[in-house]
Length: 283
Image (cartoon, rainbow, N blue to C red):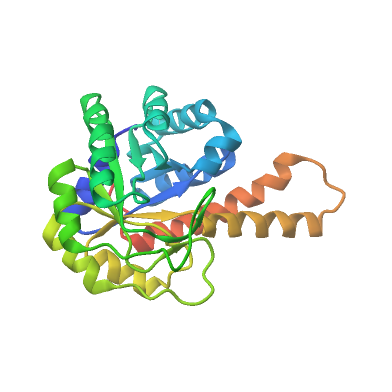
């Protein structure tokens, strides 16, 4: 069933678990996510990054997501990840996204609040949930790159002011994770997660979660993380399965047979994440 992000994440916030938000680019990825969600009875978020929108187009992503959600036996939200500006966010809302992110983290606090409030005023009026970001998460998310020296952790007091003034539905925070593959093990500031959760009392979002050790994920969830973004781990599962199939079947030219094992590999990876996050059985 197609629902808003707030509907999904308020329950996660209330009952102390996290929901996976998985990046989608094509039909096989969408199918893998939905099949995993139904097998584990888990709510789930299908999200499109800037790269996904450029690759498939807003219309294709929106229709794939909405069709999958309407036919699913579990709650599904269709989410814009790292929306860059007001016009793009409005375009996604117009095409039926039920959740959007406006990423004003590149601005100072005052400007971030201003930009976020403008989006929320419109989105909430038409029943769409909004995510924002405070602090700068390092690494690369498609076309958005934040140098390690520019990455800054989220300040709890600023987070409280931001939430109070914008009425944002859920907040992405910078606590030590990074977009893309890690060079070493990430060092997450768990005390910061706890402090931000206590002072804001809203669902919190962890970006750059692929490759983070399971114990660290469990700890972050226990302290108040309710939405966890996953992309790189799915890319790895997908590409490894395709490479293996082609290696074993070099003469095969059927895209369906090449992509089938990739879909299954992604589904297995997604099921593991849903069980780790605590969303399995929560639909």
